[in-house]
Length: 270
Image 1 (tube, one colour):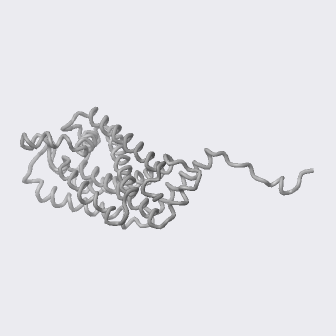
Image 2: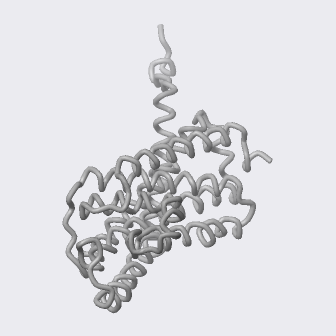
Image 3: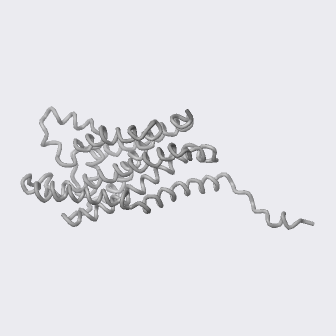
């Protein structure tokens, strides 16, 4: 005769189910944090990109003239959207994961049944969520200044997602090695900002001097911006196939590097 305790004992959860719950918890926590402090995570980008449109588009765009067969503000809009998406994807992951290290609750993840690749995926998905939300907000702001017609929606979405994943992974790697808040801010300030200013957001590569064009083609952001711009306007300074190959390769390489470093405990088990 079975006892009452035996009758109400729940069935054990399978490992796959446990891992899914853990992954979902990480993503939901990131989403709730983004929404809870939306005045810090979403609003600033919408305001700053609005200033870019007002100054570079409205005040200077008329003097610069058409570019790539489009009005300057229309040509610039996809690049500004992409810049906001990527910077916020990076910032979300680097601040969140470093915060987990600083607050000493990353150990809870390390002793959980979640493998390293799933922890990385959870934080990257959180960065992707913030990137998408900011991208929607900045797109709404851009529509206040110019008309944007999407020529190739799948290319546009694919480029945005891949670039957001790349920058989210970059933020994760930065957070792994950062030992203080100063090291969290070094890469965005001294690496990402220059890459974007010289990444084809505000100009077309053929306008550059001959000596500067090969240097521009070494900038990976140029391929992200142009692939995204091609999805909107149908024009690009680079081959779209090559742009996607570079983005996929970068995403895979960074993901593998993040997993290997997580398995070694680099930056979190010293």
